[in-house]
Image (tube, rainbow, N blue to C red):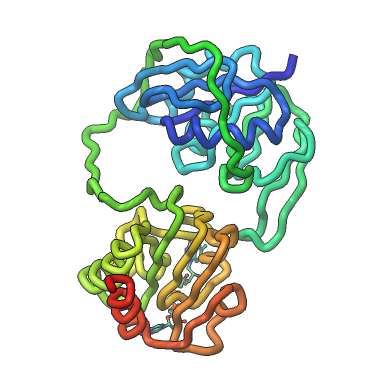
Length: 296
Ligand SMILES: Cc1cc2nc3c(=O)[nH]c(=O)nc-3n(C[C@H](O)[C@H](O)[C@H](O)COP(=O)(O)OP(=O)(O)OC[C@H]3O[C@@H](n4cnc5c(N)ncnc54)[C@H](O)[C@@H]3O)c2cc1C
């Protein structure tokens, strides 16, 4: 019988997997690697209770016996899930679809190609089928209560050892999940200016902060803030792009945003072609002014 196993790295993954499972139309279970169980509508939720996500090679080997019997194995798309599931596909000698944005049938999926400029429909002739999917493309259907709950312990042995992990402990919303994102580009000059102008405005809105690769490469913004083809893919209700030209690589990461607002001094900037609302102006004047208005 065809059945889906969602490998959820955390509770957010589990909660956002319902839309994809619904689109696939198969009964599904969830194997959640960290955190506590949340409603996702799964038949069975198995908690692995890992303290943190181990290196991909060891985790994939530990997952191998747990995925037996499932026709589909899927995770919300992230750097981590693409790493682990690719290892798993290799171990199972099977095929993988990354970044699915639509389900045509249980063996046919839509995914972006050419940095999101086109969408390909691909048919997968393998068993099991391994998939990473973009939750933002599968709606926000309300998840129902879970069926059974169980726990499992994963015996992970890896060739790599994580010596230490550090977190900046940001109080801001998670960039991939945020309802509002404020992003800045190259004109922000340096890290302090970026933090005060983009960070300050984002905080006034309760928004997450994003950046272009040009800003990241120049040391203006942290690497994990990069949005785009080689960064994070976001789909907020509101995306504010300040001092961003609108390269195809950046747009690949934001095109599913519900409303794009662009602030740019150049009336011919390509971002204005994609923006729902364009403001021709200097971000160093416009953002502080908007921030003052918000305060009032
Ligand atoms: C393989 C590959 C992958 C890539 N992946 C990514 C990716 O994932 N994400 C990404 O972002 N890029 C990516 N890039 C880089 C991309 O091609 C662009 O170089 C980059 O997005 C440009 O960033 P930017 O808009 O900040 O800078 P610029 O292109 O320099 O644009 C700056 C904009 O700011 C405007 N401006 C200047 N001063 C002001 C001011 N005071 N107020 C308002 N506006 C102002 C300018 O008019 C201009 O439009 C990738 C490139 C390659 C080759």
